[in-house]
Image 1 (cartoon, rainbow, N blue to C red):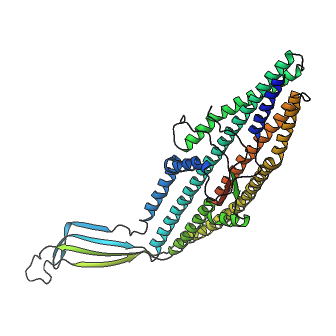
Image 2: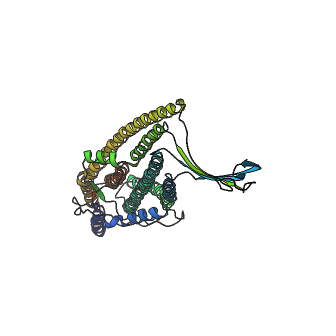
Length: 446
């Protein structure tokens, strides 16, 4: 009996050390922590390999190259005519004529066409930025969900080991008549629940791995190791600065800005339609020698220069084009304003979710988990001394398990909301990183 008590005493210290937490965190540092080195590599790989991102890059480059030629003059026209019956002139019979003409749009039309094309390319660049941000967000959220899964599996397995041991102890003591059968059934029930939870957690691994591989454009069964840690990410940017950055950098807002700029140029081009375009040309007629000698201009080929222009006489179509451009500008401004307000509300909600997760991280780490550890320690000591039951010990163990899982869930939520803020703001945010404080062994792939 004394040996069993000593063994339980040593075991209690092992369990307490297993669940121990530190109330402090590692010093903050500006750079990305080593724990996220694999995430940074995933982002780099996705930047190089993701199909959607590469497609958006090619679409943008196509529009840029297309825009470079929009200010080019129209092709010149070569004219040729042959007289089936020679045209008799004083200088001789005319056989055929030929000429060259070039059209010139009114001043400013070509530059406006190029502006419209460049603004179209800017819109594709904004779409490319939006695809990149969404891709990075998908990778980060999946990565942090995968990191939480690793912690959940690790903690669940450790609690199963504890319950298995308590079940053996209860079975031994029951055989000697020192405890009731309830102290055997309770660990078995809890162990069955944890086995079900562990099976469910393990089933989540494959979908998350396949999603990450899809985002990285890798084979679905490419192994992806469990992340080691979920860092505590501190937001260093003020709310007002985030809102200002969102207005300036959010790619969806930038897209509608490019649409508005394109439509403003389109309005100017529509107004230019009230002015004529010009065509300049030169034409020569091939004349044979005169039938009679001594004719002035005998065999000389006459040359003619010409200038023509279109007359913008019918104004209804031009008025309609200008009015249509003005309505499009008003419509785009309303869309832009509505989107800005929607994004601001989403930013406020995401900030609340981030702050809420941040608060819960501190609450579990600094208050609830230490108290749950203390409760577990007291029940363990009572169980060792024989004054407590395994039922109380299992209840305290279950409470500590739920607190630990909630802590890592809050850590993952905080990191995911931080990534969402980056999508809304339109660029990576400067954060402070500190290591999570729960002492847990590294999880292994299952």
